[in-house]
Length: 244
Image 1 (cartoon, rainbow, N blue to C red):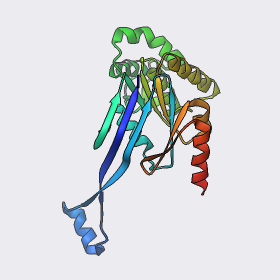
Image 2: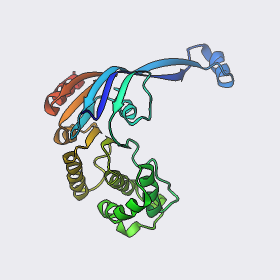
Image 3: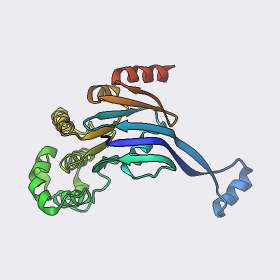
Image 4: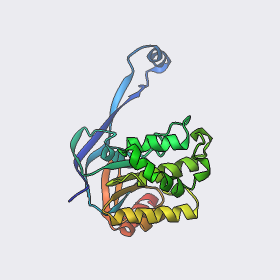
């Protein structure tokens, strides 16, 4: 069984740009509806697969297509062509805490986010204390979220996600969201999820993190897979290419 399978996926974006038409042309474009557009291809025939119980790392430079790929898997973006298959419940922490309502309390946000992740109020009530305890925020249950630091919000979002029964967990540059104790607790939680067959996809520029956490790595370059396999070997090739 495969949790994720992408076959020859292409993703294009249409973006606005201004041609070099001189001052008058650029000035007119500000007031007209004739903005020039061009199409850029971010993913170029990309294929990969992820099995249950894997932690797969995505590495590559800025603009290589990592975050776009994550959003394709999450269903946030649709591929222009190719096939995308996912098997199981996807929980995405691409923009950590983006679903929070800042004027609601932590208690209210937990119930709201759990409902968005398909967890009913009765099950949320059962998990509530564990979510709060894991995040280390029991003194702030009825505090409104706009009074939280970004780190507190990140810990809360991570705690909610791992308590919402994912089959596929997507993480984008968010793993190091607390102190050493929280990092150790998070690592233990991810290992527990993997032992249950959850597939985790991790995007990071931290190569030590990728090597220590991942069972397999895909290296993206210019929207294509430049290399894949065991973390150390792929990372070494990536760093060598980066320095050349």
